[in-house]
Length: 286
Image (cartoon, rainbow, N blue to C red; front, side, top):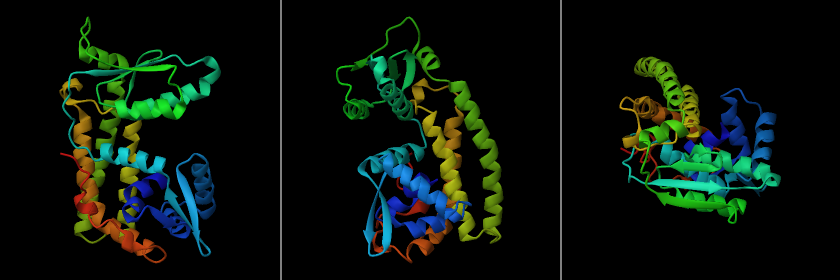
């Protein structure tokens, strides 16, 4: 949830927030001060956050690693339509020694996050141009001598769609999208009616929008973001993306008002990105 608040709000306001303001925002979700401090401490140890003091106040901000992860996530979350494919596969092969098992497990998590699929043990594939991301991972884990990246075309005997079915559980992902649509299409209808009747407060809109993003961003861990040429003809992921964008836009303005009401008391709101408008989010890619 802290990641979600930083990604959807704080990064547009100078990427820094007083811990007291963050604690106040997290209370809207039922989280207490101690829990927030414990999680922040853990996330600092993991390299996602750094802190600085101004007088008696402690401010938290995303590290370069954190900013990079948040920006990557945002570009994928707000993407409405599948992209076109260049017809080529990126194939990562590695043979990491058993005594580096923990490193190997961490690398696998990173590859799944980025959208790679497991073709065979030690061989991962993606139709997306992730060469830059892979080179950064190889350098991060210092596995240059254990990993190789190939750019290739598949020539058979299977079809490209069969490669997809072998490497990603599309039926499971489709089921998850169906569940999201079932839940949030009803929420969207109810919220629209309540907004028109003035029954939703700014604080409630803040909570609902943050929960919406928090739930939708979970698809980044399971949906590889395949190009349209490799997706089933009826793909609920596209429907989900448009539902998410509509609901997000509905909640954006009052949610931002609440965030700014809390933020401006103890933070520098003048650092807000002049081009940022949540209601008409420039990251929503058509």
